[in-house]
Amino acid sequence: MIPAKKLLNTLTEHWGMLELLFKRFKMADFSLKDVQNAIKQKQPTWSNERIYKETNRLLNQDIIIPLAKSSQLEINRAIADFATFLLQEEHLGLAQEISVLVEDLARLGNRLANAGEIEDYDELRRFSRIMDDRVRKIMKLFAHNENAILNIVEQAKANNAVQSLQKRYKAVIEAFDEYIEPMLEMVDIRGDFHACFSTIEEQISTQIVHIERSGKAYQDKRMLEQLRTRILEMHLVGRESLRKSADMLMPLREELRRNNMITRQAAKVLGLIRKNGVDNMLSSVQPHFVSDAQRFSLGQQRHMVAYMAGLVEFEHSEYELPDQQDVPAYVTPNIPDYNNVKTSFKKRFNAKRKKPEPLLTFLGESYPELEADEMLFLYQKLVSDTDIEISQSDEKMRVKIAGQHFSLFPFNTKPVDPTHNQTGNE
Amino acid sequence: MTQINLHELTHLQAINKKLVTGYHISEQDTLMWQELDQHIEQYSALFSSLGHDLQHDSRGFYYFASDESTPNMGKISRAIALTVYILIEHYANTGKDPMRALFDEVNDLELMQTLVQMNKHLFDQLEIFSGSDLRKDVYLRMIRLGLAREVEGGFMLQAPVYRYIDALMEVNEETYLGEDE
Image 1 (cartoon, helix red, strand yellow):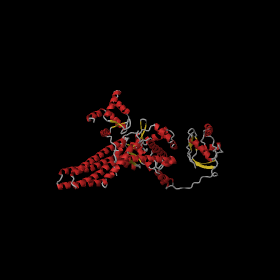
Image 2: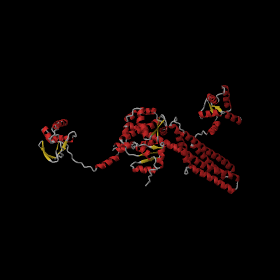
Image 3: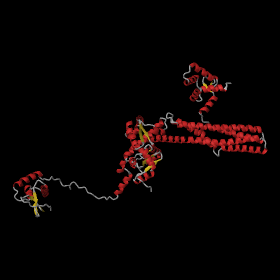
Image 4: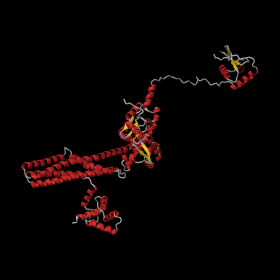
């Protein structure tokens, strides 16, 4: 028998190393070398001799024990449990653990009722104690599982990009499917669990009433009352704990479900796109954006509608395109160069400026081969030329040029005393 | 009838300028977002009388809804959609949580190159042939539309990308086949 104090001292001294071993190997086995490495890591200044001595100490005190028929070692189970408790490294228990305990509780309840009936108070006390123990155990399991779920949730939420999605959420899904759901079913108000508790409660109440009536074993009444309270409390605590756990897990589960759905959908859509082409597949679903440019173009349906509405007023009229024969052949106008006209005009009138001479006469004499409109074109150019001094006559005249008659106030070359001319086409 | 007090809408000009170009105002555009958030009723009344449909998405962004795109915008939108879906697939394949990675990871040029290389025949259809094409044709446009922001070393997607995820969830074989007929 190793003195407890000695053991605790060793534990305190080597806690760092034990924690390391515990975390690294969980519940698996390890070699002597691993232990020595762990000590070295925690106490790098220690000599090899010292490490060897300390390892032996751990082995001697049964903190680390050799596995049967193997050179491998493991942490003493009792110490491991203690470490689990200290580190809150709790692993989720199974729903069955609790349901087995509850079934046991029901069995004990029956035994207790029987003992009460035959007034065997020793037995009554014994069963009451065992039941009390079971109830405590169940409560402990509830608390334990709640912590375990908290750990799972925290791990899943930790932003650990290295860990794969699958792995991160595996624990969540398992916790939900294997613990929360069966447990919720169990504590459901219509479930067996509830019925079982009602029976036990009834049985205990009957015993209490019986004891009150008979007056025998009065000191046991208090114990039974405590047991009844504890069972009720357990039921309540269990429900609370489950609700809390479910609340913690639910959002993660939803998130995972949604993520899985999106991933699956993305893979599916990309598959369809690969098969059918990008434009074919995405045109119908892509989100649309307002763009500034489209407000000024006929790009949008509503623009088209507005445009079509405008077209309602439109009346179609026949327009005949001209035939080739209808187009008259193009004739180059044979108007002489204006500059030449002007020069010859100046030449002629500079010398003798005795009396006004009508411009048209000059044109008619100089260019008899011109058409009437061509003649008028030259006339108009000469009239509007500021270089030439001309005047407009006051009286209307009838002139014949190139076979056409015009009546106008003709412009004349300027004589010494000005006469006024005026133009006016037919 | 909502009273619209133009003096209260201090950022109207900036907001309008952004929204009419298809920009999504999300929480990262702090000033405009807060302004919109505070006077949402006035703004939506004002914009709807101007013929716009101001939408507020509860995932934290505002935009003008439109039921049609110009052909050019349509093409851009398809390229963005393809990129987002390929990103989701890529993250899922590399074992990341796609939804988290989509918004938390920086998209750098290396990632863009990888995406284009691995989905060459898809990007080819959109005339995107390299990582820098993807950057130019998709990511820079996403910035213009407020779907992403530029950070050191690359781009980060923003909440409005959810529009594409919604669109993704809408796709199913039936809609596609139904259209074919």
